[in-house]
Length: 328
Image (cartoon, rainbow, N blue to C red; front, top):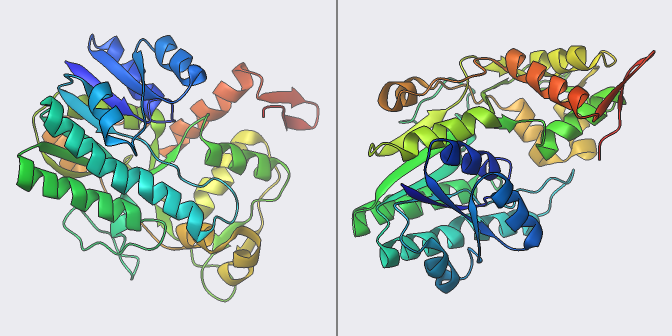
């Protein structure tokens, strides 16, 4: 196949370029500069300049691709993102999604895949949910819900084969959030944030290693199955267990616990909401319909890989007192 990918230099995108090229497909990666060109070429793809907010440039870049993946985002990574920060991400996802649909129709692409997030449908009472559950977007997930609607409409209006992969919370050695978690754990600046007056109520999260996300999209690209699926690992985990296990892998100080009301002024309401509202779901439908299984079935194997990668590339340096962060 010929596959076109927006966000081809991102945490998901560059992995997907490599996976699809390894499987013998021709992959075109949308880039903005020479640095992006080099990264796409190193992964085996063909770089092509363009902008998801400029539909004409997209139609030229998509060319005669069979499958299009809209993986571009601009998710804020700073501690307390503003409404403007989230609006920029929304433009990339939603306006960019509309432009992707128009480009696919113009060029004859028949299949479009989009990475959404499972917590767009997390339930107010914190209960387990599946693909049929009602969505409850907040300002961090409204763009995911709106983009999903763009692609659902494209299936009805233009007959495109649409696959929406709602992914669990990404972690990976090159993820900005994962690296921030590690640095803050090593410096004892990442507490366990819990609900309730004393912070003792733990939310459950569904996670996904970025390597497994790329494999999921590669598998979905090679089928003609349509739908909306939850793509997560096999075991939802409490925030407390994830942070404690990460600290143990890093040989970092034992994290302390604080209540959400105390964490909001420090970390911002978006981060605290993410860590204190459960989003426990499962990958049963995706495994059944696509045949995918996670290479890292739980966060434990995934975190081991993350820390081993950092040790091998000298992001972490072993000292007599424990690991020291030496990466950017």
